[in-house]
Image (cartoon, rainbow, N blue to C red; front, top):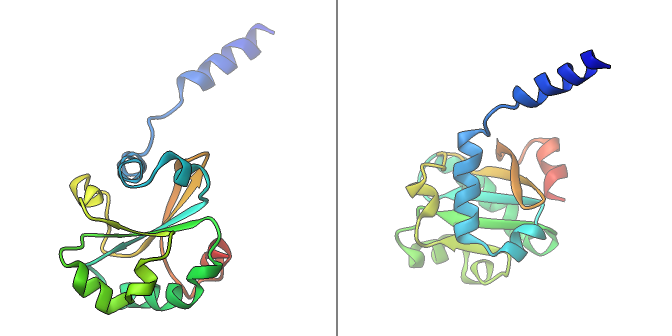
Length: 146
């Protein structure tokens, strides 16, 4: 019995620090979305304004026709310096959707939480559990978005 106790104590002591990137993204999400939005969301798609142009275009091209069917998914554009240009690129109707947001204060850039690629952030109980590059060609990614 004593060995089991020491083993459990050892496991508890070995708990690692949270991933600093997860923490930065988590902080950005909490500054950008409400607690209610975070608790009702499974996945968040972060789209940078600058970076891998083809990747960003592919992500937007995939999301635009599916925006109304994406349940429990929030989309956040960050690094946006010109909202009018973004409207021209994605369309005003797309930007008016309730699950599309603009990080107008650039929280993600400030926290150095952004990548040059669109990312999909998975949440569990309102906290970041995983971050992956958004690859619209991947079957795993399509399952996450449906």
